[in-house]
Length: 270
Image (cartoon, rainbow, N blue to C red; front, side, top):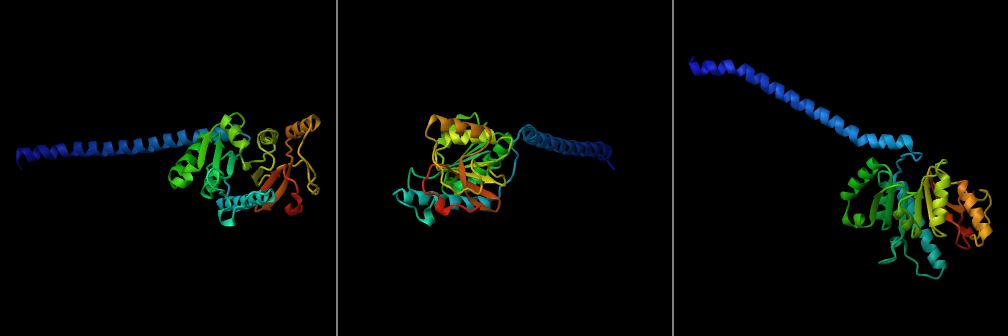
């Protein structure tokens, strides 16, 4: 064996040890980085859930789409009764340029409801306070067709303080809410103050407390004087909504805010 070969042989063990140590350091770095990344990504979600009265609850897309199709046909029937052009069932969510129905989700979570509404042709806006859920929904939106992206907007912020929420609610045809008891006074006040009469409210699992008895199917009138407005404010403070239940299937509920006349024909029997 030549001197050079002997030198290479003696150098191999340290080199092998160095390579092995480098691989271990890289592996530990990847594991540590992954752990830190997961903690950084999930900590805001956990922290928000611990201090928020609004829980994260995944809403099945199939149930959302079924309810939205009902909502679009419901709104179309009112247009027909009011003497305006009615959309066909195949194009029930679109009335042409500038006349698309507007959908707002107060607490849009992972974006399932907003993206489902946009895919059906609604102009959909979601408000989400949790940055982790907002990020997840925004990433999901990026990989969807351009037509869905153009009809959907995901806003991170407090639904009770964000000016975009108030702006969208004033033109909303349908609003998704969570009827959590502790938040209902604020939600009831928000929707009854900002939404126009006839707007539809959707709620999954949670039932919204209504102004009148569930067995009373009498038509109700819009508040028109100062005393009625005071009563409406008191009802909102109690978390009660002046609306009618018109859809109740598979834990999905749709309510209609007072404002349309002659609504009793197709109201659910309760």
